[in-house]
Amino acid sequence: MGPCLSPPFKIAGKSRAGELAAARWPDLPILDLVASRQGSDVPLTVAHAQAALVLFDRILADVTT
Image (cartoon, rainbow, N blue to C red; front, top):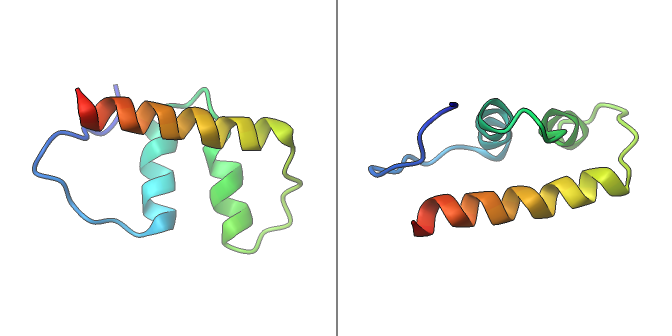
Protein backbone atom coordinates (compact mmCIF):
# COMPACT_ATOMS: atom_id res chain seq x y z
CA MET A 1 0.00 0.00 0.00
CA GLY A 2 1.19 3.55 -0.73
CA PRO A 3 1.45 6.61 1.49
CA CYS A 4 -1.05 6.86 4.29
CA LEU A 5 -3.70 9.57 4.24
CA SER A 6 -4.44 9.22 7.94
CA PRO A 7 -4.24 12.22 10.27
CA PRO A 8 -2.22 14.22 10.93
CA PHE A 9 -2.61 15.55 7.40
CA LYS A 10 0.25 17.42 5.77
CA ILE A 11 -0.03 20.07 3.08
CA ALA A 12 1.56 19.11 -0.23
CA GLY A 13 1.87 20.97 -3.50
CA LYS A 14 -0.19 19.83 -6.48
CA SER A 15 2.67 18.00 -8.18
CA ARG A 16 3.76 16.28 -4.96
CA ALA A 17 0.16 15.32 -4.24
CA GLY A 18 -0.03 13.78 -7.71
CA GLU A 19 3.16 11.81 -7.10
CA LEU A 20 1.80 10.52 -3.79
CA ALA A 21 -1.51 9.58 -5.41
CA ALA A 22 0.32 7.77 -8.23
CA ALA A 23 2.31 5.79 -5.67
CA ARG A 24 -0.83 4.81 -3.79
CA TRP A 25 -2.96 4.02 -6.87
CA PRO A 26 -0.60 2.85 -9.63
CA ASP A 27 -3.54 1.61 -11.70
CA LEU A 28 -4.42 5.24 -12.56
CA PRO A 29 -2.39 7.32 -15.07
CA ILE A 30 -1.77 10.07 -12.52
CA LEU A 31 1.86 10.69 -13.47
CA ASP A 32 0.72 11.67 -16.98
CA LEU A 33 -1.46 14.35 -15.42
CA VAL A 34 1.41 15.56 -13.25
CA ALA A 35 3.77 15.69 -16.24
CA SER A 36 1.21 17.57 -18.30
CA ARG A 37 0.65 20.05 -15.51
CA GLN A 38 4.40 20.62 -15.33
CA GLY A 39 4.53 21.49 -19.03
CA SER A 40 5.44 18.20 -20.69
CA ASP A 41 3.79 17.44 -24.00
CA VAL A 42 1.67 14.53 -22.79
CA PRO A 43 -1.43 13.82 -24.88
CA LEU A 44 -4.32 13.65 -22.42
CA THR A 45 -7.32 11.48 -23.26
CA VAL A 46 -10.76 10.73 -21.94
CA ALA A 47 -9.12 7.97 -19.88
CA HIS A 48 -7.12 10.64 -18.04
CA ALA A 49 -10.29 12.59 -17.25
CA GLN A 50 -11.94 9.42 -16.01
CA ALA A 51 -8.88 8.66 -13.88
CA ALA A 52 -9.11 12.12 -12.30
CA LEU A 53 -12.72 11.42 -11.32
CA VAL A 54 -11.83 7.99 -9.93
CA LEU A 55 -8.96 9.57 -8.00
CA PHE A 56 -11.33 12.11 -6.47
CA ASP A 57 -13.67 9.31 -5.38
CA ARG A 58 -10.80 7.34 -3.84
CA ILE A 59 -9.40 10.33 -1.96
CA LEU A 60 -12.87 11.22 -0.68
CA ALA A 61 -13.38 7.64 0.49
CA ASP A 62 -10.02 7.71 2.31
CA VAL A 63 -10.67 10.95 4.17
CA THR A 64 -14.28 10.17 5.11
CA THR A 65 -13.77 6.65 6.50
